[in-house]
Length: 127
Image 1 (tube, rainbow, N blue to C red):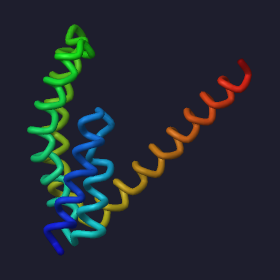
Image 2 (spheres, rainbow, N blue to C red; image 1 turned 90 degrees about the vertical axis):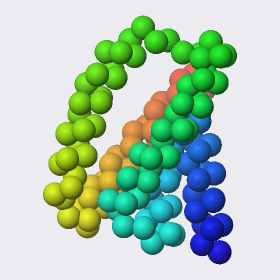
Image 3 (tube, rainbow, N blue to C red; image 1 turned 180 degrees about the vertical axis):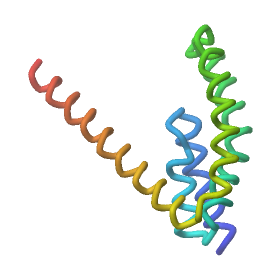
Image 4 (tube, rainbow, N blue to C red; image 1 turned 90 degrees about the horizontal axis):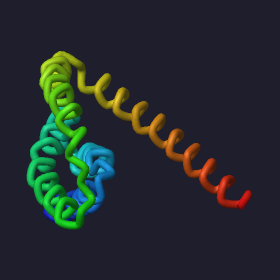
């Protein structure tokens, strides 16, 4: 049964990650809530699974002409540096605080996405 939970988490995270929507927003809660994985470990697993998912997704998107690499370097350098700093910082954060912070982030992200969706729906109805 445990295998099915992990496999399902991989499917949901992989589908969203392949679409470029951030599989970790699903994978981390699935691992912590249903698989009993501690928050720090769930985030590490997410980062580890992100490597092959991103490489394969990047290849598919590039093959379909959906990749604009001109500005990517300007994002990769600071993102890589700040990722390393964030990984060092999070080691000193209590698991409960990390879980609460991630939960708040997901709630804010949900509200923002709801706002964008409602705005697009209203604009579509006005046409």
